[in-house]
Amino acid sequence: MAEPFNRRAFIKAIGATGLVLASRPSLAMASKPPMGRVVIVGGGYAGATAAKYLRLWSLGAIEVVLVEANRQFVSCPMSNLVLGGSKSINDLTFGYEALQANHGVIFRHDTVTAIDAAAKHITMLGGTLSYDRLIVAPGVDFNYQEWPMLASLDAQKQVPHAWKAGWQTVNLRQQLETMADGGVFVMNVPKAPYRCPPGPYERACQVASYFKQHKAKSKVIVLDANAEIISKKGLFAKVFNETYAGIIDYRPDNAISHINLATKTVSTEFDSVKADVLNFIPPQRAGKIAQEAGLTEKDYPWCDVNFLTYESKLVPDVYVLGDSVAAGLPKSAHMATNQAKVCASAIVQLMSGSLPDVAPVFANTCYSFINDHAAMHVANVYRYDAGKKMMVSAEGGGVSISPNEKEAGYAHAWANNIWADTLS
Amino acid sequence: MKNASSFCLLLVSLITPSLWPIIGHADGVFAFSPEQAIHVRTLAASCAACHGTQGNAMVKEGGNTSEENNPVLAGRTREDLLSKLLGFRDGTRKATIMHQHSRGLSLEEIDLLATHFSMQIRVIRPPLSPQKLEAEHG
Ligand SMILES: Cc1cc2nc3c(=O)[nH]c(=O)nc-3n(C[C@H](O)[C@H](O)[C@H](O)COP(=O)(O)OP(=O)(O)OC[C@H]3O[C@@H](n4cnc5c(N)ncnc54)[C@H](O)[C@@H]3O)c2cc1C
Image (cartoon, rainbow over all chains, first blue to last red; front, top):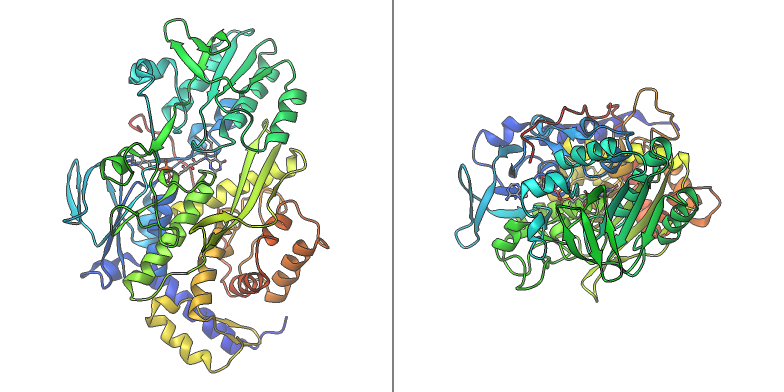
């Protein structure tokens, strides 16, 4: 295509200047930030993305402090592959350095213990910090109320959830490796909504794939508290019945009612099964700090927000992102980053005296691996519905025809791209 | 949308972040209305999970261009992007994923996206380097 050089080059150059400005920490932090300070609680997919895009879209005019309890970011997406054996946890672990160096995000390694919304400041283990606007993105909290025997760290070393990637993922893989051939792996699916709807079914496939290759006499029992497979149903059902016939024993409508930790025996209304390796995924609710800060209604586990800005419906100038939000949509990393971008855009608009988008639209693509070389997807666009005042599924979404190798390549590329988009 | 005088707007946009990005194009200057600019920036950013920040998909050495490496959108011509998206949408172009996404978008959104990505600067970046998980991670 012919390019009348000057205008295009000029505009591109200016565009580039904008990016450079946005990514120079020194420019924005030398003096008081012209547009104020946003503090973000939690540097997971949602919080880290919000931090980056607030800096980008405000051209560095908003000071952004990201407070995160961990020094490293460990990705839940792809962590089931650690159980299958095709990935190591060290392939999924990243630092926050690039967010600081490239975008001037101020990173605080600390845990937020309290939020004072009236005074507009937060308390951390290591001090306090004031804000103009606060974003709370703490992910999920596991609810052990009905499972006190599993609440301790010691109990979780025996029966890990591995539903936050990290040492528990590694622990569960080691247990699978140590298990003798002919053993039984038992896992549950909590009642929806929970983090990552297809995740438990993907996990069952990963463990089955490992058994099929290395421990052919072993079995996977999946106890699902839901009446049926709740994501990519037809695809997973076919994989369970065909690829993993004789290995995966899927039992719908089988909520666990009792766990004997000493014998690793679990009971449901209908069955009692003894596990050699047991993985219990607990029921979930909004991150602890969100509950404590009054961002959830009494007896309701998730946070209600305005979907144009993600501002809490309960506490002004506090925004909630990611898995903690009551969105009625899949709790995924891609969705968490989408929400973060809508929120960052809205905050930049509001802090510069303009209006946010009145009809946000975003897309979600979610891959599940059935072994080390084949994956399948669900893809959907979501659109703000002004009548319902929430994001709803747009036309056209759908799933793969069947798991395949090409999509495994796309899925690896998805991971590399979302990691870089979130953290650099 | 096409308007040479929007050059002034473009300059204004540099000091008014809410108007950014206003974009230029090979055969003229396109200026998004403020509403369009805000709408397309989050919509386009949503593509980043597969196609990279501002359409600069990661390029992994040794990765197969069509698989391990997802298509780069930054800096492709608007015409090329438009014809691909419209082809996915009406089914004349074969797709694995994009037929589903393109059917969830309006024609105006497809136009905004094609224009937006055509104006992004191509930057080649390798994937992020992973680290060894530390024992202290909670
Ligand atoms: C096994 C598994 C597989 C998955 N696969 C996929 C997939 O393939 N694709 C996909 O899109 N999604 C997937 N998901 C879902 C995805 O991981 C979540 O939806 C996503 O992590 C949500 O992002 P978030 O930012 O809300 O929470 P998180 O990513 O959990 O981040 C929350 C952060 O907040 C920090 N934090 C919490 N409280 C405090 C505090 N008080 N002070 C300081 N910091 C705090 C935590 O340390 C954490 O880093 C998967 C999940 C699992 C478990």
